[in-house]
Amino acid sequence: YKEINVEVPLREIFQRPTIKEIAEYIRGTASAIYAAIEPVEKKAYYPVSSAQKRLYIIDKLEGAGTGYNMPGVMVLEGDLNREQFEATFQELIKRHETLRTSYEMIEGEPVQRVQEEIEFNISYQEAEEAEIENLVQGFIRPFDLSTAPLLRVGLIKLNDTKHVLLYDMHHIISDGVSMGIFAKELASLYEGQELPELTIQYKDFSAWQNNMFETETFKKRESYWLETFVGELPVLNMPSDYPRPPVRSFEGDCLSFTVGEELTGELNKLAAETDTTLYMVLLAAYNILMAKHTCQEDIIVGTPIAGRLHVDLTNIIGMFVNTLAMRNYPVGNKSFAEFLQEVKKNALEAYEHQDYQFEKLVEKLDIPRDLSRNPLFDTMFTLQNMDIVSLEMRDVKLIPYEVDNKTTKFDLSLNTVEINNKLEFTLEYYTKLFTKETAERFLKDYCIILKEVTGNKDILIKMIALEKQYSKHRGIKKDFNFNLSDS
Image (cartoon, rainbow, N blue to C red; front, top):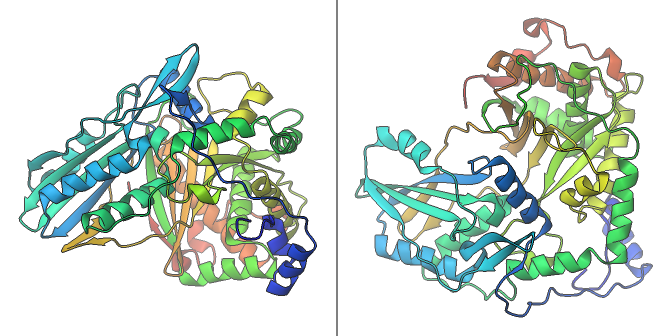
């Protein structure tokens, strides 16, 4: 779009899968002039983005908690220069305005205030390796959104050549892609590299997005989503082990399992044969899992999307991620292949209209506020395809350190990543509703569905039986590596 002023919707890639066909599409499509995001004039404060507004309101309504914290831990092996390391963080904070932005309410609306300078220090201590877990848990604590920075960093020295880096940000200033930018730029600046100057900052995006809400394009996007959610909206009636608490909280736990190379290959082959993607196949199977457990045939599943549709946003740290509410109908008389094509169509249309913010949809649908649930959906599905890179700084290697996740924002969230030709799944579950045994059953049932649909894509949804003995189900032990202990 930036280079030749022609927009190519994602669906065209599926309909015209060769370079020649795409070239023909470009030749026959009218130009749409690419417009850069312009910097806004300097002010005392600025409007927040749609996603930031929702996070601010959640924080004020539900109280300060850690449900929207984004913590991380890395082991640093090598000869670390502490002074240079601290100076690198100061440089990052100077470079990205979001790292020195606070949030407050003015005239009934949340706004963001960019601080020119802020005080920032890395906490430092020495400890033994056995103490790390407790130190990490103590490090993650609520942020006060009215006080910048919404970032804290700690450094634990284990010995002269081994440190542990602790960092935590509030989601209102960051997202998954931002964490990757943060880590890469941290390594580059530590090595003394010069980074290209940022032409815009997050506040410029916020202003651009707020202006976009007044355009005809936005109104067309809105019409699509309102038509998708016309009529009575389903509420996921998942049988639970405990009664639903009157107020939603973030207490959770997670389980993990790995799908072997053979079945991962079969799932990718099924996607290729049906002109779909691995994401669509896994999402269709997840809808069937929800349908089997709820006896419902109208299912809404949330899925996150990076939300960086404009190329100017590539290297900006901030909260861009949007949520797409995918509504599908896994009716028992449909074959899996037929249902998969419906999921494909809905997914492509949702992605084409992805710049319509989830917060706007909830507002327009006027969903009655229920403090015991999330608005519109209670379950998420994610296929993670962000680059997983091993970072190195001068004389220092950065190694991710796994930390127990004891929070969840939804009743159930299934997160997936494909690594080394295997699928690694993590199921987060709300411990106020479900026991560990129930969460294990969800995972095993999902595995059965994956086996069934790869064995016979034309199987009717109602014929996929979950009540088989898992030990007797064909290949269940060979194809799945369950780590059904607390992850």
